[in-house]
Image (cartoon, rainbow, N blue to C red; front, side, top):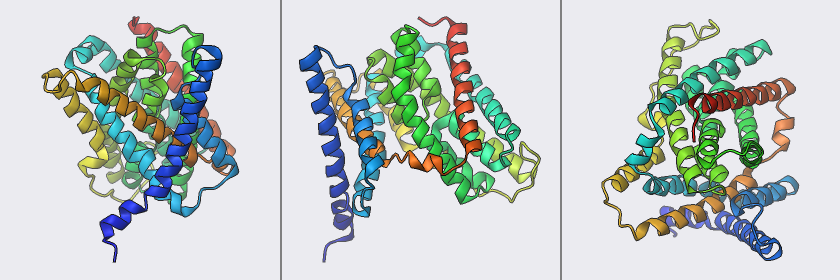
Length: 347
């Protein structure tokens, strides 16, 4: 009899193989670009999403692939985020300055208010409006998953919010570099823009790695601040829900107790620990390039998994009003981000 742990590991292989195949196809297309045009117009990270999504649009992966695809899209990408912490030192954080850190927190609060207001204006139920607002302003699916039990959200609302966030998150990753180029943004400004607008931490890597290391560092740090806002947001919602007077004045049952892992994901803690190790010179200089390349390889594999998991057809089944709220919320977040960048006059 195969041990349970070994059986679980073996179940990952088919999905991992599928993600590797998509990733290799993305690398092959990028190599072809280099040979034909002398440069790569679309990075392998983005190509992996496009190829995976194209396959998913015409073919539904069998259940046997799901464990490996989910492992690639989540765990491998979280490991990449941890490794990325080694590329960031305390000096980099200090260079960002308190103005940007405070501004990022302010953008999250304003985006929450605007998104929730738009949702209620378009007659979405209170809980659905809260889910979309948190997913948009904080960290996408992770925020939705963390907030759902706090406000006692319906499973259908959670599924619809996650479906839109997943699809729109991919669209942002693909389109944001074009916006940055059109606005002729510096690497720092573009990184900050990505950190303020991209939904998930791992997706920030996909949006910034093709631009450069500086953009990736800036984007990851700003996004880190947004993620850390999840704790105060969940606490606020827990208190107001328990008091029976949420943002819309609706009564609700007392929320469950929150665990630390719901408020601060493990890979964020890992990122901070790696950043601390880098700042204290505990990581050999020779290991840094290898860690950076490993993070990029894992990111390409994870973006392949993201593409294979993205079903654009799910959006069409979720309703016009939800689509309108999600898109308007994202546009509001983008406007707030550009306003902050202009206000701080970043390099």
